[in-house]
Length: 278
Ligand code: CNA
Image 1 (spheres, rainbow, N blue to C red):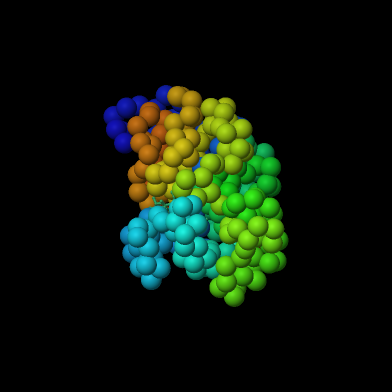
Image 2: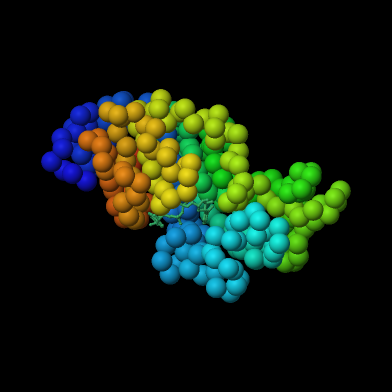
């Protein structure tokens, strides 16, 4: 961040500047963009963190390269590694984090325009963010279907297969069944494209827990208008955030970051109460 560049709309280029902007009622429509980093404290590993990320721990799956586990062509030839991983990632085993509750709080306050998530863990829904406010850009485990004839497959049945470590197959054509999460080589859901204009309408953009390396999602923060503040709450600086005069970087753990932001907005207790009730 080039601190010598003065902000254009924030009073100061830091957390208090953002909080003041929110308290002054200037953040009436907020877009939030998130990735795996907001779910790591729930116990779900992200992809790219060194040592703890999934990619660092895939050796046992004997993949030709780490991303293969989410590659549609590789899945066709060898679905077992994905299903081994699916057992770990399958929703229902994890509790939303305080960061998820913070997004819910934004919604409760009528400020959330849209949440764009790359996560497939459904924790946003479990935290009480309504489905209509969420764009699951990389799909989710909420539905599954045959990769050949697209026939839908029941959640109960896939759950049984995942628990038993067996591979589900289509009842119609015997094709492989896959949760509707987006693999490399697959198109993003239409909801992503239908909502892609929204970041431009926002008066505040919050980016959290993502390395911003997967396109086209990674370009969303750039769609925010110049002169509208963006805040990055992440362990590391990513995606060129910090390059604009009203960008604020809050580097570190995102749960700690949202707690500080909520506190500065006067929402600290409300956030904790909301999270405790989740
Ligand atoms: P990533 O590439 O693994 O990046 C995660 C980012 O979050 C990195 O910049 C980390 O430094 C940062 N981070 C990790 N933990 C924290 C924390 N506690 N506080 C703050 N920052 C943290 O993940 P992306 O989401 O950017 O990559 C896109 C992929 C990952 C998407 O396709 C997802 O589907 C996929 N993914 C999702 C999940 C999930 O649903 N929970 C888990 C693993 C991977």
